[in-house]
Length: 184
Image: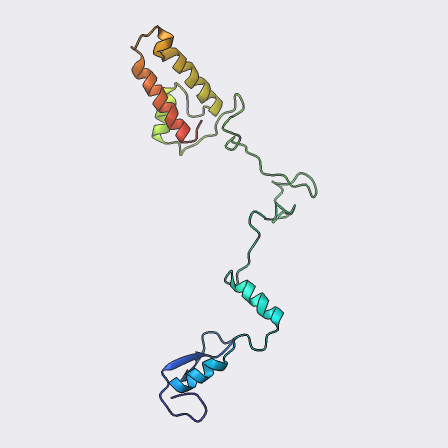
């Protein structure tokens, strides 16, 4: 039955009850749902600034947002007062270091070893063996060894002797794999 006062018609149409009662509906007949919809205003009773704030919040699904690229570190604050990893004295934040040399233009300090990496795949291990290196070789050691082996096995360095051509090909393939995998 239609919930419009004084109407006894069938009520197959739903109409929202209003702000603060989301998910609740009136049941109206066709004539009364049309009349209700003509005057319905979700924002009725809200000031202009409240409507604007609601609309701005609705753009993000009413979830909190942050400026892109900004976080507590960007503003000189730590999120955990007991975690001092990123600070150098009061109010002086620093960026986290790169203890494994992953983000320093591909170079590792001479003598620096790559940390144990149990996830190092078989192909990477095989490629390191082709360059006569162990699993802990630094980026600099890999590049240096590659250059040494290419000079040693290149036909131009051997007076045109092509006997070590297969070994040279193996060295180049191994180095290209390590390079593609980001290990050198």
